Length: 457
Image 1 (cartoon, rainbow, N blue to C red):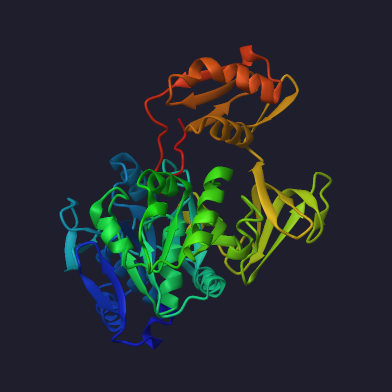
Image 2: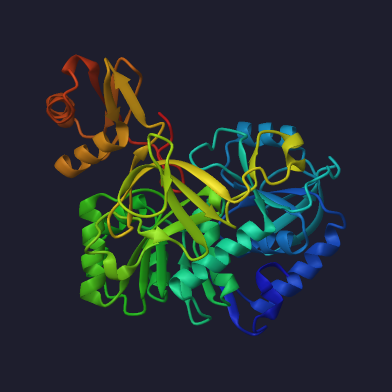
């Protein structure tokens, strides 16, 4: 059975959600068996996910029965959902009760409804297990194709990385349709632990009540920005043992604040790095190095390997170097899907992922992400790193921002009116880019998706 769920203590508590509903490992297994009787043939199903038990059951039951879910947010914009539906033609839909769809209802449980669409079962590659939208491309039909081994290998890597046991109570607040959110769930289910599954805002009292029972919390940079506004580091959370971060780069100030908080409170702060194309996590910085290696992603996770390919195309695995970071491991996914014909494709990556991230490896073997290959502008021969400019602004002004542009102009989006006048001179001083090629725009908000990633504006 998926993640060896049938080998766990049947009476052990597996998950509890915001409603207070809870299920044991035995009940998850029993549901998978019942769910499988409703879908007699291997087929594609759309799972409209929320962070609640019905959604988690759809995930575990689908993979246990070799049904292939495309996991989407239940809040997916109608036009995008219809485009994906018309393109991929799923045989079934597993969605929250109350959502209106013109399909026959064949089964309902735990606040979710299984509907038969009538599209029929399309042929699927034998080892295809799951489809996820690519991070940051929620407006695109481009999907990441996962194998069964991808998911289980990553879950095992994360279990080993954190030393997870059945005693853990993991706070799972990242969206289920987001690769990091699923990684938290899968790794803790593999360990036989308890998942505290919450779809509440981090500003909600119910979230804080649940967090007080958690032994670990995983967030993205935006999560920690919100937590700091709530004075997270001053709260009494005696059961919380590990705080971990992924989904983007923290500012040096935020990184040090979390590392110092962990040191002072006897907890562990573990920075991690991952991509959807590698079933989430790929690297981590051991907690004992958090104060020494600010903003480092550390080393490859157990079961993985990192390297750097420099500007001359030379790949190295040790020693100081800079260039594109490459990852190898069983969690590297099969490839992308742009349409239904791609669901028959096999493994196109063969365990190797050229990440597109520029990294620096120091003399101790620690990796630091320094930018994206595609996050650069070249204006009048001057190479401008967008990530670098954002980090400079955040460090100097402690302000939210987002950079974009073309080969004629750098555009900086800000929410603070005071920055509109001062930023051009600041950026010119730091980058030597002429001020006439810098445009600062005031916006109401830097738009982000549910996982905290900036949506292209």
